[in-house]
Image 1 (cartoon, rainbow, N blue to C red):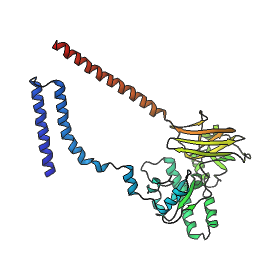
Image 2 (tube, rainbow, N blue to C red):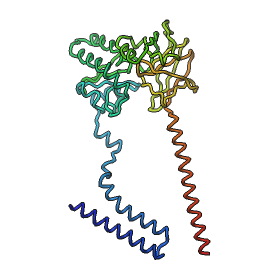
Image 3 (cartoon, rainbow, N blue to C red):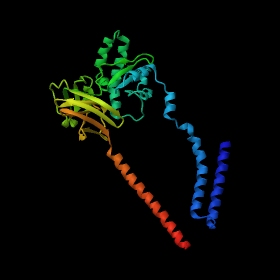
Image 4 (cartoon, rainbow, N blue to C red):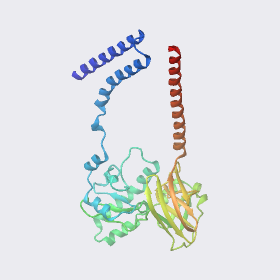
Amino acid sequence: AKMLSNDAWRSLACVLACARVLLLYSKNLLKEKIAYLLLGICLLLDMIPVAKRYLGNDNFTTKQQISAQIEPSPADRWIMDSDKSYYRVLDISNGLSAIFNNAIPAFFHKNIGGYHAAKLRRYQELINFQLDREIKQLNAAFGTSVTYEQLAQTLDSLGVLNMLNMKYVVYNPNAQPLVNMAANGNAWFVEKVITVNDADSEMTLLSSINTKTEMVIDTSSASLIPKIDAARDSTATIELTEYQPNKLTYKVSTFTPQVAVFSEIYYNKGWKAFIDGKETQYERVNYLLRGMQLPAGNYQLQFVFHPNSYFTGNTIALICSVLLILCIAGYLFYTFKKSKSEEN
């Protein structure tokens, strides 16, 4: 009741103040610009207290404040202290149901799990048809394996998790995480390309192929990646040297043409591939990853997020803003000159 009363008295005061300004302006006792200024001040005095009631200083937390609230576990610290490369982590320490409902691991690592209300459809389908199965298989192995060698056999069989570069498994937040030596890495070359007729077949085949040496692709996307069943250059290398949210840089060295798979989600509405600055086509492979034919040689490969619609929209918005400012400036200049001429 007190809040309602205070709001009512403040609104009444603002209404009376605005009425007073309009009365003085109507009697030519206030200049037009001064009247506008006073009306604006009255509106701000009415709106700011209400706005601060819902959005005060406590509603805006800094990165330092967030860091203070979320502390890394001993397992998280071990990973961050011992590995400066680009990897992904699967955290099963809070139970299987929490893997895709807990975003805290993503605060410290590139996370296979996590939560977002708006998921990519293909990734959600991969969770439903492949990841859930492999995660349950891994969790069961923790209960039956006596030695790391036994557990390593299970890790090597997890083709989908390995193609997502699952390098660490956190099973106990207070213990050293499990290091997965079978992870495919950030990018790798394949020896065999398998084409299928539809997405369902592509998803099904992921359960049986060796994702380290084989790749599956829909025939609708296979035109730029020829079907190759030949021995590849054993000395060929591809290494991720820079990772930014909008740019990935790889160093490639190969004596023969190669077909590469990248452990990154395919999204052609903005992500573009460049070989030494020249744009190159890539395709969706393994249901949701990126793949492309690479020529022989030593060169730099980059994926850059540069959506044309965004930058075109920004350019149009900038031009419109400049035009609007020019129009306002022109109007103010015109009214100023007009008032001066009337005074003279």
